[in-house]
Length: 366
Image 1 (cartoon, rainbow, N blue to C red):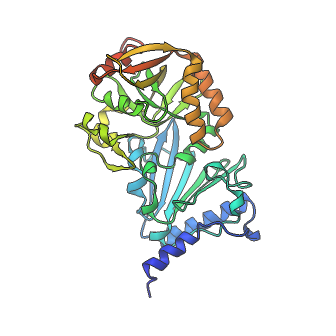
Image 2: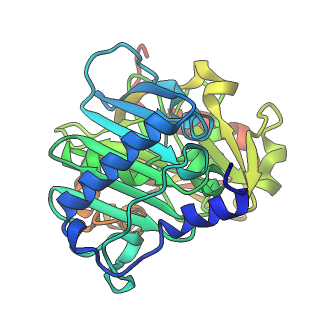
Image 3: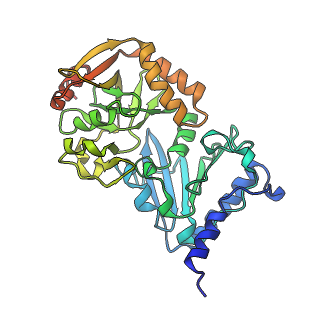
């Protein structure tokens, strides 16, 4: 007889609750093996198993789904980087949900006292392994950095937070890319093949709306909210997600864009669906720009110090991402010393924004 839905969901949810330590699963390696075994059971139980490949900052990433429920939630933000058949992946991420596969998580071998900021687990987040749990969403993320293998599990697809629909697997990408000299940063970016502008600032500063305003201009869209910063000699920014979010009250400024979803006071767009021709996978960084919404008569640029740019770019990156402090600070400090930094004073005429930003880029053929 089929298990009643309410009982099934309660059971799946309980499987992600903290428990008394289970000695047979003590230690990060043993727990990671238990998670891997659960995923394989989910593959066998699920209605289907599919893979998707993506080329992210020159690294091939493979997503393996047990069941199809998470595919329409996770993949839209990454679809612009789709690269099926490109070879063997450097990173494989295995995803499943308990509700549709019937495979709940193994018991969590730690107590509530072991939780650290960003849901990371003391003793289970090491140089090789990272483990975190979002108790509110009943969601687990785990990675073995040496093997390039990660797992993402959630009790029910309906519990995926709205923010993650535009930035799926953010924590796993952060852990992995940091190991491979790519720093995840909280910033938007626009540009062309010659150069680009990194748009940084606190929430509500205008960086998202500034990036979206450049659609339809000669500036292509690299990303909004999160991008990857290359740590090579020349600063370079890489696209991670093609999503964009603006406050609901600002939707009227983008009549050509149809939101894919709306929640938490924001509208979510996927540029790959709306303007695929306007996307750019990477470009050099020519300048760091700090948008500022205020009573400005016109849109204009004002030079600022590297320290001012560091104060606005570093904290939002460091505080939002786990274990990112020292390396992120070094990467951002180096960036703001290598390129000029400006305050973008946003005036009422948004149509002038692309031309103002384009003036910061090298001239010549794009």
